[in-house]
Length: 347
Ligand code: NAP
Ligand code: GDD
Image 1: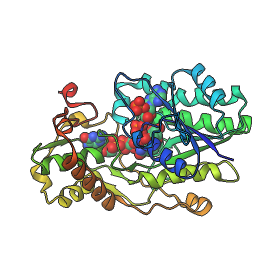
Image 2 (image 1 turned 90 degrees about the horizontal axis):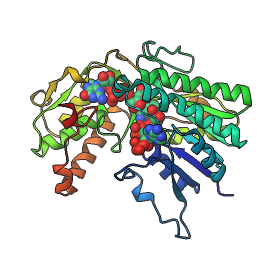
Image 3 (image 1 turned 135 degrees about the horizontal axis):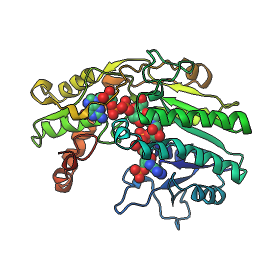
């Protein structure tokens, strides 16, 4: 029997890799997409087949996590075996600018989706994209037993969604799990997250298109892994015999500074000539150090990260250099996105 999955956030970094992986495993994949005035499906265009093709197995549906009634009609129509809730306003710095919107999407969105599952009476398995950002000020190493101490509206919204997921498991017997994922990156990472901002800047500086990149706090520590490995972990959580919550992480630490040095050196550039500080990129409250302990996922799911920060930096720089070399003038001339908002608006 072909399994059917519904992915919210299918147009994002993780959604695109998850869709790719599930299609390769033989699933029928349904994705929730937001209507936009421009195309926002660039990360999944390579997977798309017209629905009239006999072998089409990926289908996209308009909807929004802010629209609970739509989630009910969609679940009733699709009847998925597995639901992956990846949609969110996922940028920590932006969540300080838009705390209400972030709460509505990242927090309440999960409630609306869980309620939609309950109201339709489906016996599907549910994955909630929880985050290491929930640990916030709790010192590393962090695992499933570490207390939450969120340091941003985004982190607080994720804590709410985490507990709702756990509550629906306990109250209604849902097969609902929280994947508490530490930072994971890739060439498909949004351009305003720090790793991609750096790899993209390195490619542009190397090509002579830019001379400097502005960053905020480069002393923070993160545990950066490779996104394609993390979506495999999400899937494994839903194949387990019992629902439970799991941390996914590499267990290695890296500062933004070290990631940046590796990225610049890989392209033969001296970072000190090209990196400037801009306080605009500081956060009102920062998460100083996230280093995960994924031994529970390794022991029970057989999941282990193999790509660590240095290799990741090189993968991302190589991909951005190649993208730039193969891009037409439209990509090169496009407005430069050098922060957590597009540069023209930020200036
Ligand atoms: P991402 O690239 O920012 O993608 C977010 C997705 O959510 C996009 O598809 C976006 O659609 C969609 N979305 C946003 N608001 C929505 C709404 N109101 N209704 C429906 N869809 C909406 O994020 P990601 O890096 O793939 O992360 C996936 C999930 O994992 C997120 O929940 C994130 O918070 C969480 N997470 C990520 C990491 C990480 O390091 N990447 C770590 C821990 C947890 P558009 O394309 O239309 O904007
Ligand atoms: N974005 C950004 N831009 N971050 C910067 C910059 C900059 O110019 N300069 C320094 N940083 C620092 C941030 O202050 C933070 O300490 C670190 O780089 C990482 O920032 P992001 O790449 O924006 O990621 P994040 O750790 O805040 O959040 C990501 O990981 C979470 C999991 O821990 C996001 O993917 C979240 O959605 C995810 O939940």
